[in-house]
Image 1 (cartoon, rainbow, N blue to C red):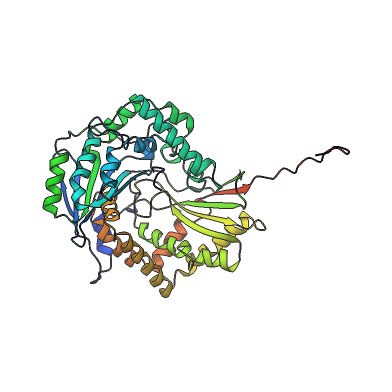
Image 2: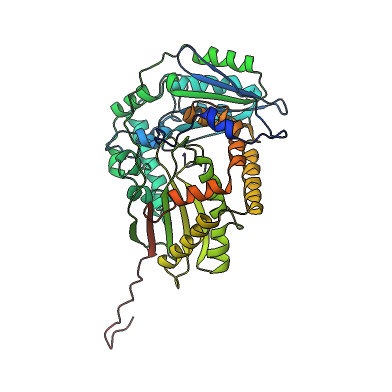
Length: 465
């Protein structure tokens, strides 16, 4: 993401979107988003979801490329390229994009994840046409110059210094953990990027990446807000239809099975004041019958102060100082290849990683044996559904969610099916999922400890300081 703002289905477990939807519990009061989809002749998928409640719009353009598909020996290239997309074109030099949107009260951003790169804007509806013109313009071409490349290489390196190298714990819970949990390069390399690889990127690399992955047939455009479907499709055709489709390279097979032996790594941290632990498990593939159960299980274990891990590790045993959970760099619904459910906890110096892991294993064993009681399941599902609907309140998040779901699932209507999938999860589903995935054999652990403080040397007798 810019510093100024801060897989294939598993054999035997996969379900189609329609099959998953068929299992969802029916509810009469669910909020369903209107989802209108059309594909242009050049392959661009366009989604419009109207909302006349305010004269604003949210726009998202998602490209089906991310860290998993960047060139080998070019770690961080997809992230670097995201920055380059804001550096101007021959028609709209550097600064025009930001000024056009923010000058009218809007805002914009972009981010890179394993399986996609997204560019988002929100603004008054009067800015919709300029936004679409700008997005189409940088889909056609960029300002490919040595000066621009060098500038953004330096910007990304500084971002890494600020967010990773000069921060306690340095993102080890999402950068380092994947390097040890996964076997294939596509999944286990540092997507933030090494300085050596970033500096090695050339203008030819940039041109080729834009040519191969930034064509309309590898993109989804979503518009949410004060616009009708007819208006949205007409504007998309006006600004994007003339951009020719381009061949997209065939992706490699980056699927991986679950791990069969626990991995334990110990690291030192010169900036940390307290030790921390990251424990990560490979989770169900997108579309698996266990995906929704894993999402609910993750909430049961680590979703806020009422979760089992928080109550057991932070409040009860008082081993951990805090606790958080991650689904890779995305979420439980927005991934298209192997990803991890990770628990990150800072723990007391008087304790140790073994005690923390033993406490987690004890709670997981309880779930495997007893499942989850009805009251807890209702509370967790209510929290998840409220969070899902709250996220969709803003037009920028609504557009972005639709575009990402269309990219990952091939169907933006998944946005209206996810609540039903959550509601349909049973205690037995959670037991099965916990027993299958949250095993010690499938776990990777990094124990990050403060670097030992070096005692100052005692001056020889008679010396004065």
